[in-house]
Image (tube, rainbow, N blue to C red):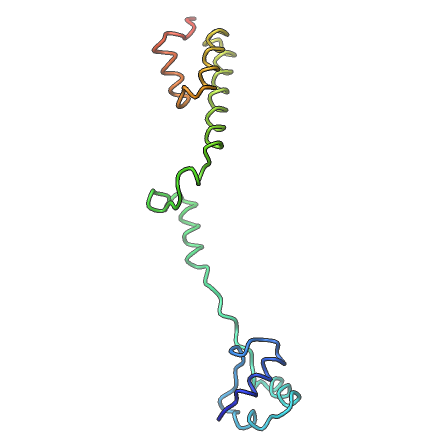
Amino acid sequence: MNLRNKRLIASRVLKVGFDRVWFDPNKTAEIKEAITRDDIRKLIVDGSILVKQKVGISRGRARMITLQKRKGRMNGSGSKKGKRTSRLGRKEEWVNRIRAQRNLFSDLVENGNITSETYRILRAKAKGGFFRSRRHIKLYLTEHSLWVKK
């Protein structure tokens, strides 16, 4: 029994895709007799013709991954895609580092741990990219005996 044309009419009436139209296998005779769009509409009201639900993409796995990442899992080198610089840009990394270093300098001056001359020298070195981190600054101060003795 070829119901292709009926399915096409039904899909246009229902405003859905051809493959989403479902015919009741027990009522194929009635469907075969339907000729006009009105006949198809009556069959839709009867429930002989239905619209199949759209096939979606399950987000279950995605939700699980998000949950694990919130807990700090799945974040190792094997899970990372892209270069280090594509995850955190060079400039952004620099800005974060220099801000942390400059905050440290101002704290050290405020607390009287370094002199203003030392502060100027350190700030210039930081601007030139000499220090890797805050820890490196403290190490430099210790090695060069630049801490103010109280």
